[in-house]
Length: 194
Image 1 (cartoon, rainbow, N blue to C red):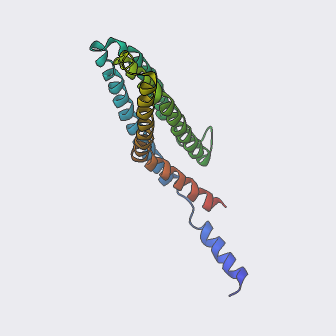
Image 2 (image 1 turned 90 degrees about the vertical axis):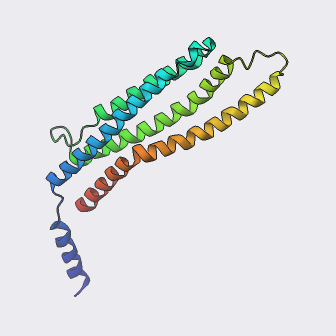
Image 3 (image 1 turned 45 degrees about the vertical axis):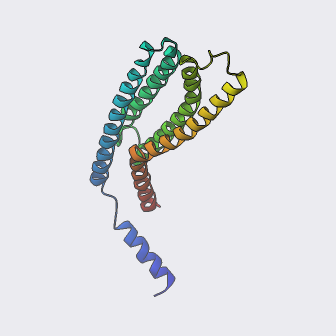
Protein backbone atom coordinates (compact mmCIF):
# COMPACT_ATOMS: atom_id res chain seq x y z
CA UNK A 1 0.00 0.00 0.00
CA UNK A 2 1.50 3.32 -1.04
CA UNK A 3 1.12 6.80 0.32
CA UNK A 4 -1.68 7.75 -2.10
CA UNK A 5 -3.79 4.74 -1.04
CA UNK A 6 -3.35 5.67 2.62
CA UNK A 7 -4.32 9.28 1.87
CA UNK A 8 -7.44 8.13 0.01
CA UNK A 9 -8.48 5.82 2.85
CA UNK A 10 -7.89 8.59 5.38
CA UNK A 11 -9.96 11.10 3.37
CA UNK A 12 -12.79 8.60 2.84
CA UNK A 13 -12.78 7.75 6.55
CA UNK A 14 -12.79 11.43 7.40
CA UNK A 15 -15.75 12.08 5.12
CA UNK A 16 -17.67 9.07 6.39
CA UNK A 17 -17.94 10.46 9.93
CA UNK A 18 -19.81 13.74 9.54
CA UNK A 19 -21.01 15.66 12.55
CA UNK A 20 -24.66 15.05 13.21
CA UNK A 21 -26.35 18.44 13.31
CA UNK A 22 -29.06 17.10 15.63
CA UNK A 23 -26.46 15.90 18.15
CA UNK A 24 -24.56 19.14 17.81
CA UNK A 25 -27.74 21.16 18.35
CA UNK A 26 -28.64 19.08 21.43
CA UNK A 27 -25.15 19.52 22.88
CA UNK A 28 -25.14 23.25 22.16
CA UNK A 29 -28.62 23.70 23.66
CA UNK A 30 -27.61 21.77 26.76
CA UNK A 31 -24.46 23.85 27.09
CA UNK A 32 -26.41 27.09 26.62
CA UNK A 33 -28.94 26.03 29.27
CA UNK A 34 -26.13 25.25 31.72
CA UNK A 35 -24.42 28.56 30.96
CA UNK A 36 -27.68 30.46 31.47
CA UNK A 37 -28.27 28.65 34.76
CA UNK A 38 -24.79 29.56 36.01
CA UNK A 39 -25.25 33.16 34.90
CA UNK A 40 -28.64 33.48 36.61
CA UNK A 41 -27.27 32.11 39.88
CA UNK A 42 -24.30 34.44 39.52
CA UNK A 43 -26.59 37.44 38.95
CA UNK A 44 -28.69 36.64 42.03
CA UNK A 45 -25.64 36.16 44.23
CA UNK A 46 -24.15 39.42 42.99
CA UNK A 47 -27.41 41.27 43.62
CA UNK A 48 -27.67 39.95 47.18
CA UNK A 49 -24.00 40.71 47.86
CA UNK A 50 -24.39 44.25 46.54
CA UNK A 51 -27.46 44.81 48.73
CA UNK A 52 -25.58 43.43 51.74
CA UNK A 53 -22.87 46.06 51.22
CA UNK A 54 -25.37 48.70 52.37
CA UNK A 55 -25.96 47.11 55.79
CA UNK A 56 -22.74 48.49 57.36
CA UNK A 57 -23.70 51.99 56.20
CA UNK A 58 -26.27 52.11 59.03
CA UNK A 59 -23.44 51.70 61.57
CA UNK A 60 -20.75 53.70 59.75
CA UNK A 61 -22.46 56.33 57.57
CA UNK A 62 -19.18 57.28 55.89
CA UNK A 63 -19.08 53.81 54.32
CA UNK A 64 -21.64 55.13 51.85
CA UNK A 65 -18.83 55.83 49.36
CA UNK A 66 -17.63 52.22 49.45
CA UNK A 67 -21.25 51.00 49.23
CA UNK A 68 -21.89 53.19 46.20
CA UNK A 69 -18.77 51.82 44.49
CA UNK A 70 -19.97 48.29 45.30
CA UNK A 71 -23.38 49.21 43.86
CA UNK A 72 -21.82 50.48 40.62
CA UNK A 73 -19.69 47.35 40.31
CA UNK A 74 -22.68 45.12 41.12
CA UNK A 75 -24.95 46.80 38.56
CA UNK A 76 -22.24 46.66 35.91
CA UNK A 77 -21.53 42.98 36.62
CA UNK A 78 -25.20 41.95 36.60
CA UNK A 79 -25.66 43.74 33.27
CA UNK A 80 -22.64 41.88 31.86
CA UNK A 81 -24.01 38.57 33.10
CA UNK A 82 -27.46 39.29 31.70
CA UNK A 83 -25.83 40.13 28.39
CA UNK A 84 -23.90 36.89 28.57
CA UNK A 85 -26.99 34.72 28.78
CA UNK A 86 -29.37 36.91 26.80
CA UNK A 87 -27.09 37.64 23.83
CA UNK A 88 -25.69 34.16 23.45
CA UNK A 89 -27.97 32.24 21.11
CA UNK A 90 -26.63 29.04 19.60
CA UNK A 91 -27.53 27.65 16.26
CA UNK A 92 -29.43 30.38 14.52
CA UNK A 93 -29.10 29.08 10.95
CA UNK A 94 -30.94 32.05 9.47
CA UNK A 95 -28.22 34.42 10.58
CA UNK A 96 -24.94 32.51 10.88
CA UNK A 97 -23.45 29.07 10.56
CA UNK A 98 -23.04 26.82 13.59
CA UNK A 99 -19.29 27.36 13.78
CA UNK A 100 -19.73 31.14 13.53
CA UNK A 101 -22.30 31.02 16.32
CA UNK A 102 -20.04 28.96 18.56
CA UNK A 103 -17.07 31.16 17.71
CA UNK A 104 -19.13 34.24 18.63
CA UNK A 105 -20.06 32.65 21.95
CA UNK A 106 -16.38 31.91 22.67
CA UNK A 107 -15.47 35.53 21.90
CA UNK A 108 -18.38 36.69 24.08
CA UNK A 109 -17.06 34.63 27.00
CA UNK A 110 -13.49 35.87 26.46
CA UNK A 111 -14.73 39.45 26.51
CA UNK A 112 -16.73 38.74 29.66
CA UNK A 113 -13.66 37.26 31.39
CA UNK A 114 -11.34 40.15 30.52
CA UNK A 115 -13.75 43.00 31.22
CA UNK A 116 -14.72 41.45 34.56
CA UNK A 117 -11.09 41.02 35.54
CA UNK A 118 -10.25 44.62 34.67
CA UNK A 119 -13.29 46.00 36.52
CA UNK A 120 -12.62 43.93 39.64
CA UNK A 121 -8.92 44.79 39.70
CA UNK A 122 -9.69 48.51 39.38
CA UNK A 123 -12.63 48.65 41.79
CA UNK A 124 -11.00 46.66 44.62
CA UNK A 125 -8.43 49.36 45.53
CA UNK A 126 -11.04 52.10 45.19
CA UNK A 127 -13.50 50.27 47.46
CA UNK A 128 -10.76 49.49 49.98
CA UNK A 129 -9.67 53.11 50.11
CA UNK A 130 -13.29 54.21 50.58
CA UNK A 131 -13.76 51.58 53.29
CA UNK A 132 -10.54 52.67 54.99
CA UNK A 133 -11.88 56.21 55.00
CA UNK A 134 -15.36 55.10 56.07
CA UNK A 135 -14.25 53.29 59.21
CA UNK A 136 -12.28 56.35 60.31
CA UNK A 137 -8.72 55.18 59.72
CA UNK A 138 -7.70 58.60 58.43
CA UNK A 139 -9.17 60.45 61.44
CA UNK A 140 -6.55 59.70 64.09
CA UNK A 141 -4.07 62.62 64.05
CA UNK A 142 -1.54 60.62 66.12
CA UNK A 143 -0.90 58.29 63.20
CA UNK A 144 1.39 59.74 60.57
CA UNK A 145 0.38 59.98 56.94
CA UNK A 146 3.25 57.70 55.91
CA UNK A 147 2.16 55.00 58.34
CA UNK A 148 -1.43 55.16 57.04
CA UNK A 149 -0.20 55.07 53.45
CA UNK A 150 2.00 52.02 54.10
CA UNK A 151 -0.84 50.27 55.93
CA UNK A 152 -3.31 51.00 53.12
CA UNK A 153 -0.80 49.95 50.46
CA UNK A 154 -0.20 46.60 52.17
CA UNK A 155 -3.95 46.08 52.47
CA UNK A 156 -4.51 46.91 48.79
CA UNK A 157 -1.72 44.55 47.66
CA UNK A 158 -3.13 41.69 49.75
CA UNK A 159 -6.65 42.45 48.49
CA UNK A 160 -5.52 42.57 44.85
CA UNK A 161 -3.73 39.23 45.13
CA UNK A 162 -6.77 37.74 46.86
CA UNK A 163 -9.15 39.14 44.24
CA UNK A 164 -7.00 37.75 41.40
CA UNK A 165 -6.98 34.29 43.00
CA UNK A 166 -10.70 34.35 43.84
CA UNK A 167 -11.68 35.68 40.41
CA UNK A 168 -9.69 33.02 38.58
CA UNK A 169 -11.00 30.21 40.81
CA UNK A 170 -14.54 31.47 40.34
CA UNK A 171 -14.20 31.61 36.54
CA UNK A 172 -12.60 28.18 36.54
CA UNK A 173 -15.51 26.67 38.50
CA UNK A 174 -18.45 28.55 36.98
CA UNK A 175 -17.60 29.31 33.36
CA UNK A 176 -14.45 27.52 32.21
CA UNK A 177 -16.13 24.10 31.70
CA UNK A 178 -18.60 25.65 29.23
CA UNK A 179 -15.78 27.63 27.60
CA UNK A 180 -13.65 24.50 27.24
CA UNK A 181 -16.55 22.51 25.79
CA UNK A 182 -17.25 25.25 23.24
CA UNK A 183 -13.61 25.26 22.16
CA UNK A 184 -13.64 21.44 21.85
CA UNK A 185 -16.80 21.52 19.71
CA UNK A 186 -15.29 24.19 17.48
CA UNK A 187 -12.02 22.25 17.20
CA UNK A 188 -13.89 19.07 16.22
CA UNK A 189 -15.89 20.95 13.62
CA UNK A 190 -12.76 22.54 12.18
CA UNK A 191 -10.93 19.21 12.05
CA UNK A 192 -13.80 17.57 10.19
CA UNK A 193 -14.22 20.48 7.77
CA UNK A 194 -10.53 20.63 6.86
